[in-house]
Length: 464
Image (tube, rainbow, N blue to C red; front, side, top):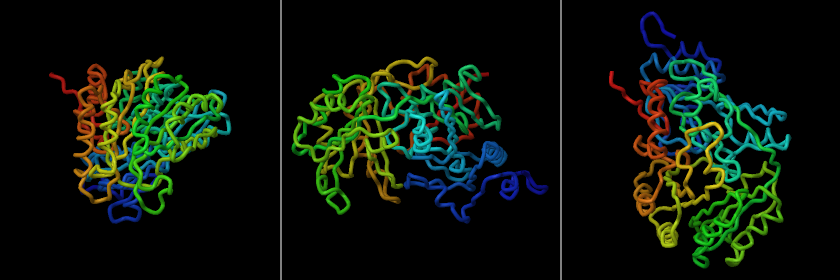
């Protein structure tokens, strides 16, 4: 990809080597490709490569390496953090195929596929993936970060159910990565993030799940301030088949918001039960006794409609957020959390607590890099922000909200982190031995840090 007058590759040469498309800043589609679901601080690369296949991914790496620039992958879903300035942005939305093998109960997922595509492909066979609360999230990026989904307490992390990964590493090599082929890289990628290469395909195990009992109960926190505490107490009584969460948010008093929720600080209790509707009703009944709910969406539903459980926004928007992994939640901490994140907060704060434990606490048959399995809860706070706004508007309130929990926190989760993560914070997602192993592999596969990722792990420097 070079010409006779310039040793660096040219964009025209890149175009000739691609099956997909090349977009430059003045080209049509540049803004769409560089923004994605997250509207804040979009990427501003020198060139966008819309890869059509694995060979295009390899070509993009070669172009970046020979140009002396960095490469990042456009997030398929929520996860973009640090924006790339200059360099190469790899857009994989054309690589969105999904193949299901119903006999083996597996799915092969291409780089740009989201969970919605996997769910829809698996459902006709009575199967389901360990997908997350929002079906529009990219399946591979979600899984590389661990993946706490709707069936998590019964079946563990999504990363625990990966059978194979096809990876292009920064040296341009194609690697078939399994428990027996490149086992160290297999362990690193499953829960250790995407800082070692670009995953072009992934095979996962599917579960024989057709229906769940799920949905939400909505309570006005002005009338039922004890709702989060009652939910926390209730989580200690339920079987692993029940995965649940509570989300607290102040709904604005504006048209478009349901009348029952408008202008209220609401606790939305969210449930996904892997069992009969009758048993689900019985398990949830103690929480119904908290008072008259503002809304009740609980029902038996096909897994293909599982996005209704959390009912998260599906339109691109700007947001920033942080999370912590906790062993437990105290009464005073929960009461303060309700007060700090209410309508009086300086910015709108959407605060979510997820119940962990169960299968999430057990090591998988093939070890992976998911950290802090002993955590009992994850706590995250997120604020919507308009593009161009000062991100400090959210950062300071988030710090004030989470600081009381920091001393007892086990660490952070790679997922549920919406914004730039400096390496020191990434380090807290793992135990020291795991982090050292990841840093050693970073030095082996990407010693020059060609990849620009959301979860940077500096290569471990060894003395010679």
